Length: 573
Image (cartoon, rainbow, N blue to C red; front, side, top):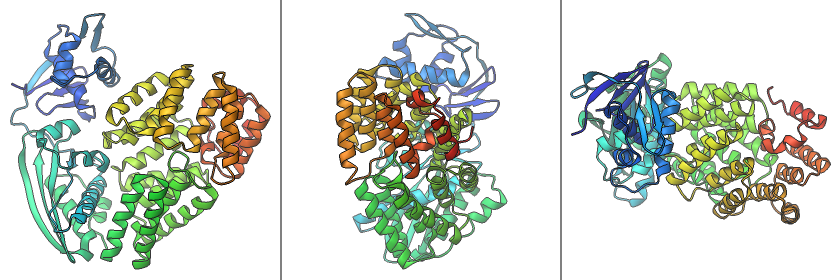
């Protein structure tokens, strides 16, 4: 029988029934497996548990590698500190401080501070309406995420539960949430019907249910209405501004709304072809409804993706980023309360305008309007890290991951954060965990390869970058990083061949000059490296934002021309 006890130790409280961990009364977001390991250790009452016992406690009969347990122990130590869990060499682990039992959790319903909106079921007659149901799920998540007193799981993580057979208590434990929203959408002609219900996750107790039937033109109003009803049921504390945002919405032209949904769908695929399809969708939506701010914001993100090296990066920044800025500013002109538009503008201001203070203002406004937006936390972390504010950046990186626990990009981002903070072992551990989450996500191998390079593990690094090139279809930036790795690992002829290949290809497709500079750095040709960095400056390469934290440039960092470049870009020091 599962324990329902509540235990205190040090500053911490462990609610075994709800699978919840608190520090000084505030909920801590940790992985479900880490909680299961902690429960087993606390219940052992000071006796050591061997690795097999702990693996069984967290994973049952599922076969997993021993490194999975090590990762969860490491996570617990980061959260709790080093004083609670002792490693007994060749024997296992032991919980050192006696935990005091303070209550039984059975029948106790904790305050709802976090929830997950499961993918709404499509009940419409047209199978193509599936994307409409998904968009309604995302809209509800977005509206609820605007409430600062709630932690709402992001869409990327949620969509992994589409058509799941798991029980709601099981989902609640995996996502570490107090409540779950589920329901259905039926779209016929110009009418839409939504059924929604709120369930307490740990007990599967139904708290609320309601059905809504509206004209499709009022879809935005309907989304706000459902979000307000859920907020009322969970007794969320709304600020006056949050109340106003959930009470204000304008009618939208139905076809423009559906085009915007399709545009976001294609944008999320993040290929050059899909981005151009998304642009077509957003432009058609704007033609139909020029005052639809969300369509302008979506268009801005598409142009940014085409000009950003860590994304699609297929276009010169100067050809697309000004278009992104114009679209974002138009969205804000139409609706200054649209968090996505502030995030879109901040994205351009950081990566193209190199305006750190201005971008920070916009990121903070985006987070004020929608504190549950993982992408805003993610990109704000980029700004903080590029400016050397490592502890603040780590807090934002962790917040983004807490909001989108199963998202490959958010998991990879934390590994990227460790990489550019010089924490290479932590980067490798985090990226290895991400491989387990999605073995076909190319960015994971790319960044893990760069971490191996910094540790001097060149063969491992080459293996990782080769895998990344295959999965990412040999994009120039990965080829450039591979050539740099070849040069520093003694394979200079291979580096020179790739250099010549990229130089030739630059006549027909965009090759970031920053990558050419990196290759020359590896080859020890300082003068050419600095010339290409100057070219990158003239083309406003987004990679220059990270000059201060890219350790591959350390050999030319003392050069006065390098320090002058950092000063011209305006990187905070």
